[in-house]
Amino acid sequence: VQLSEAAAQIVDAGRWLDARGWAPATAGNCSVLLDSGRIAITVSGRHKGRMTADDVMVVDGDGSPIDDRRPSAETPLHAAMYRLDTSLGAVVHTHSVVSTVLGRVLGRGEPDRGAAIDLEGYEQLKALRGVSTHEGVVSVPVFDNTQDVASLARTVEERWRGRPYVGYLIRGHGLYTWGTTMQDALNAVETLEFLLTCELERRKLGS
Ligand SMILES: [Zn+2]
Image (cartoon, rainbow, N blue to C red; front, side, top):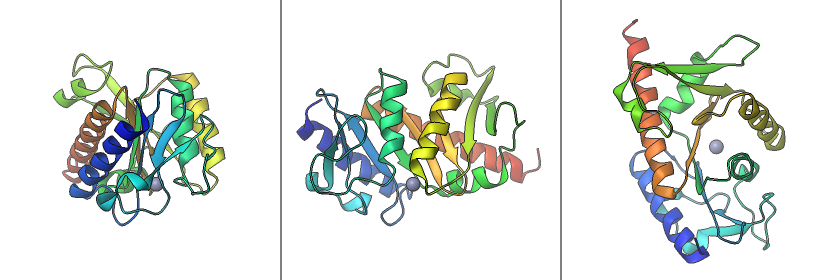
């Protein structure tokens, strides 16, 4: 993917997230891996529903900016995903209500495997990459929120090496997920937002 195409995909993705209320104010961010190995990512502090191509910038594979603009504060989390899975082409982060709330109240897992929300019994699970049946469990890790993004990126990488996952939640903060293309990543966002909403509704019913 070239920069102009990546920027167009990121601008469209921002509008799509904003239309669903999944990136309030200037929250959320998106990136696309470029053919050069660099990363196209949203500039820090821009409203995702009102971006133009100028609100997309380029960082190195390690997340360092290549011009004097400031990329999203969470750029190291994007760079980590492209390192962990070389098939990935896009990473998307939302601050939806459900992804913000669920990580605060659920996912207190056993200490040895870390906190996670286990999704099971949903037909929609099959929309996730690598899932071919509604049987089985899809485990979404939940990490503690921190302003030390480099440290969070290390936690994400450590958990991945134990067992790769389809996305993760940061407590009281939001969702990260990804795909081989931007469309693939947005499908993962839509599917996980749907499944997490189902899980929230199920818990509210006390079942
Ligand atoms: Zn965030």
